Amino acid sequence: MRREALATAPSPDSRHDFLVELRGEPLPGSRLLIRMVPDRLILEASGFAAYLGHPFDGLSSPEALAVAILDDLNNELVPRWVEVTVERDDPMPHRVVIEDRQPTWDNPALLARLHRP
Image (cartoon, rainbow, N blue to C red):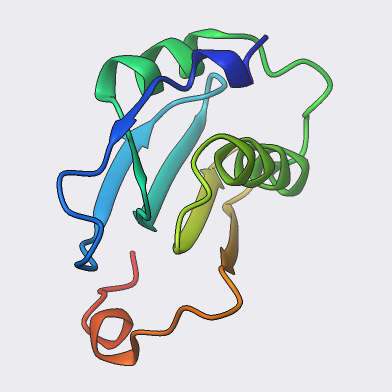
C-alpha cells in the first residue's frame, strides 16, 4: 500500500544523468534525505508526500527504515543510482546511509560533486 503511493512520471530526458534530492519526515523525529539519478521514471513530489503519509509500521530502527525505503524506490522507479539517508537525534545522534545503483551505471564525475550532508 505504501509503495503504491510513489507516483511516477516519465523522465523528461533519460539520455542525461541528473541528480534529484528529496527530503521528508517518515516517522516523528526521523529525517530522510533521498538522492537519486533517475532512469526512465522520476518521482512526482505529490507522490513522495503521499508516500511519507503512509505508516512505516514495524520499522523502528533507522537501518530498517532506510532499507525499506530503498527497496520501495528500487521497485517503483528503478533509478540509475539512489542513496537513502535516515537520521535521528533521540535517544542519541544516529545516521544511516545506504546506496544502490544499476550494475552498468557509473558517473564518477557526478558523484564526486555531491556534498555529503
